Length: 74
Image (cartoon, rainbow, N blue to C red; front, side, top):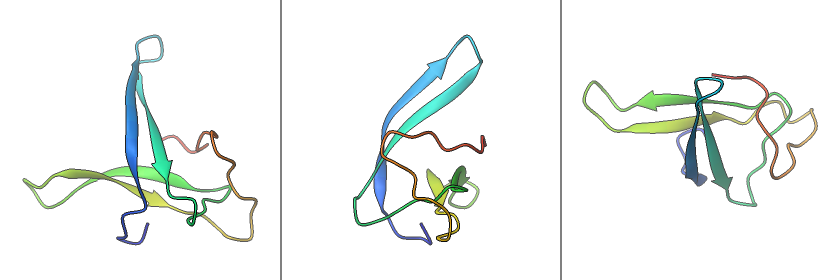
């Protein structure tokens, strides 16, 4: 979030039926995601490693509960 490491990817699951990938991410308790939060896979430069960028959302909305799914697919 904003260039700060706030967690890690715990599990990557390929859902054959829907032809998509689901990621289970772990975020440290001191950070919060809100109702319109979403994530995007990014890359450092042309040959750099990939990372998951998380946009935390609007703090005026409800907090996302542990175990929830981010609603905006990316």
